[in-house]
Image 1 (tube, rainbow, N blue to C red):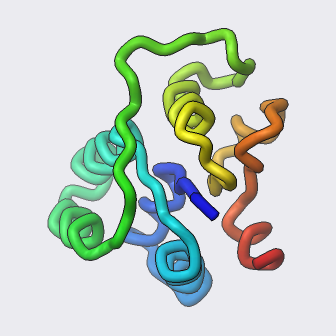
Image 2: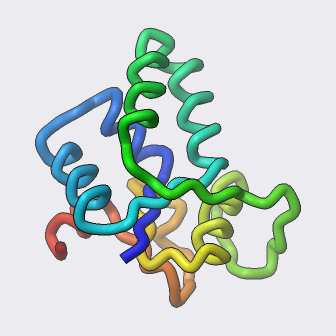
Length: 131
């Protein structure tokens, strides 16, 4: 399966590592095809610089060592695919839809009310419990 991670999942994995998050990253990157969008990577680096400046190097190393498929978030986005509470999250899920991602893993509650067929939206715990 092609699985995309949200920025908050990556931030948690880098800044607050624990056995459960390590297991998630391992499972997704080894047993499935991990996919990251250019938007998520840019957001990860921006959040790390702003909130955790002493972890910027860790984030860069993490991205360098992590095996993933990079997809590009288009600069022009069709905003008619779905509704989402936080419009700044739209490009992330839009990228997942147009790139035919099977599962999108996020800890962001703004994705809870999004009604789409694919990708399936799961929390890290839901994914680990199921797979």
